[in-house]
Image (cartoon, rainbow, N blue to C red; front, side):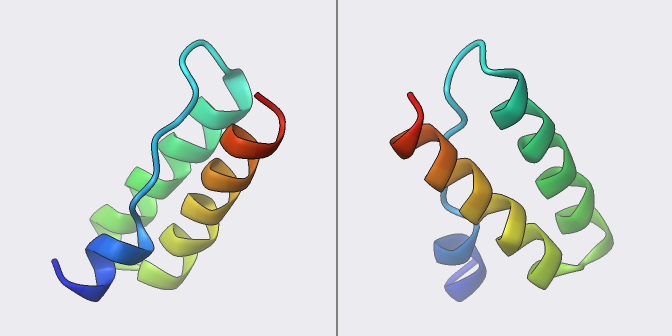
Length: 53
């Protein structure tokens, strides 16, 4: 919620294995409360989805 929602806001590109792997790691980090790690994976998804696809 709030800042965390903004930090973790991303959408993996459909059918992309790199985005899917980062999304899975983001979800796992969020579940254990490691927001810093989740935010790094969210950044990877945003950068990959917008830069490569």
